[in-house]
Length: 161
Image (cartoon, rainbow, N blue to C red; front, top):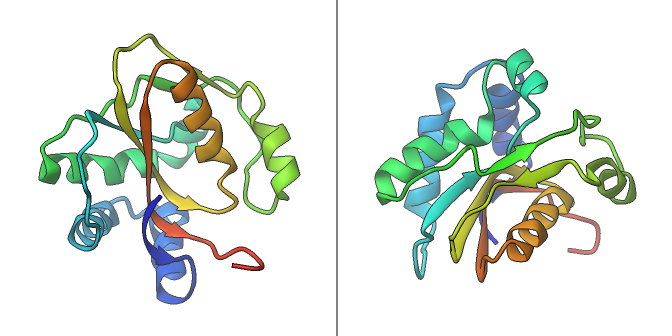
């Protein structure tokens, strides 16, 4: 997993402004910080932002992972595909749920379209328990991907870490 910061302090404030206070213009800053701070051994064939359910994306006005992915892919010169993965069920908001409830919440929530990719990266804004990205990694590997990288701006520190 490639992450640039812990989800606390000024990073938590910045991510909350971006995500919950309708400031999508922060995506360029977040993307720049990501590709300036991450040392990648090899680039994936494609970057896949974590999908939102269409209703939730319409309500928010944008998919935060997709907004961050655009400038990253421009800088790294790799394509972004926001249609390969889809969220088919309007799940409860993950924030505030336990790891077990998050897993149950995401059962059968995603689908994947046919593809021929072998190395992909999944991008999320904040990884909390890792349930969302783990679910997507399993789905992608079951669909034929040999390598699935996880990229995120922030990661919460779990108890014991």
